[in-house]
Length: 265
Image 1 (cartoon, one colour):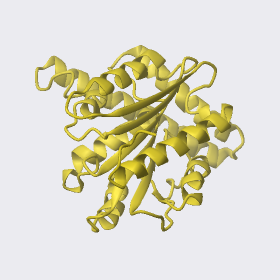
Image 2: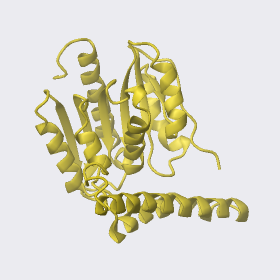
Image 3: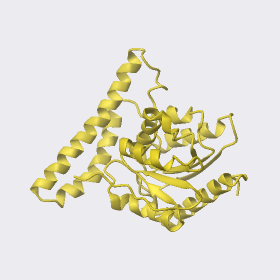
Image 4: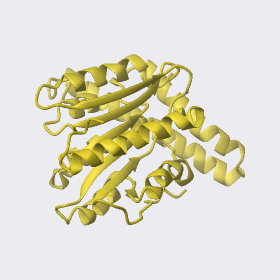
């Protein structure tokens, strides 16, 4: 089974939009979001951590190039924090002017409840693919589904064991706090989430937004859209007009900031 390929076009204003998809997101799933940015003339891209690092290493050779991230679910959020922690030489978050968060972040710890929530995502993503595939391809999807579930649980379990052993603190092991406490937390954060999300709780996402807004190191725009009825990573599907309006406002604020003005509209 092929991994999603990067979507890259030449854009404007030296701004590279990096889209980090949810678990199991295929090219076509992320492409509709990338297409919005591409129509506005932006460079877009997204890959697994190692390949993404190589891509960004190339595009960031120009000191004028800057990043914005569009992040989906905890899979995308983990990719973002892993990219920054595993490849510090890229200074990915330091060079980021804005983050658009879709259905994340939640403050996950190891528990059967969180494992169950993750399994719901895997079922949602893969059960339809398995049902509509032949025997061989269907079994490939089954194996990949089990591997993704195991990988996620193993990471949470290892973090839990390291916390219990006193090797790291709960904040050190948490991607949620990694970004929240990052010295270069971007000045512009847009967040779209929903009370109907059974994977990443709306109250936890709201808590991140509130804490980010309270960071005293610099002025920061944290713009939130809390919906009532859209499922995990399905806000664009449920509310396309509103979602596009938020994306447009996000880009306007980033461009104002890049051009030396206030990000306020």
